[in-house]
Length: 294
Image (cartoon, rainbow, N blue to C red; front, top):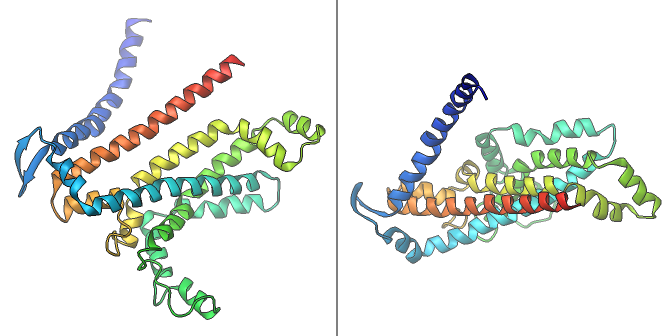
């Protein structure tokens, strides 16, 4: 490589490295440092202590936050990918309606989070919400239903709204992957007497395994980072019943000013995200290795 080419390569990559250091490494280091620092009334009092993590362990709300976060991430990801796979499979079937359906299901994805959250908040309102009124007028429920005010119901209602918001892109990615399945494999399975379910299980799924793994990991990262939807719809209520990691970090930081505790939760959140990415890289590497041995 010529010196001029090497210089050009370094010059092109330097802005990216600078951006990563400025917006990723720097803030991450600052949060990690603050998580080990006792902060009292906005003043740093001592470094190298695990007091913030001990405070989280003693916080009864944090246990509920972990439970809600597990429902939010695991339940949301599973349902998002499952529904996305079903919709993507349907879209992959040639139909005159497919083009219209693609445009229609993209609508939730292109809407801003604030618009989505406010629209669903009003539709699910216990007194004036159209969903509750429809159920009541049809005789399916007696009286009003407080979808966002019931501690036993609110998390799953948020998960349903989350799926409506995140599923469209998953469906389109999987639709493209299913359309890319070789026709000769499908035809060979059909000639061997395989029915539609067997063709999907033994031909389609193995061919889209990489895309399925990718959208699962991407969905988990999206859902873990989601903040606006639950915060606008419930604010973590009622009685912390819908409090997840992202909303609790915000509350501890900007309402209670417990920056050390919030930083400790951010470190835990970062470890969860890193674990998800590491798992994806491991599965991806094993997948490529098995493909290379064939």
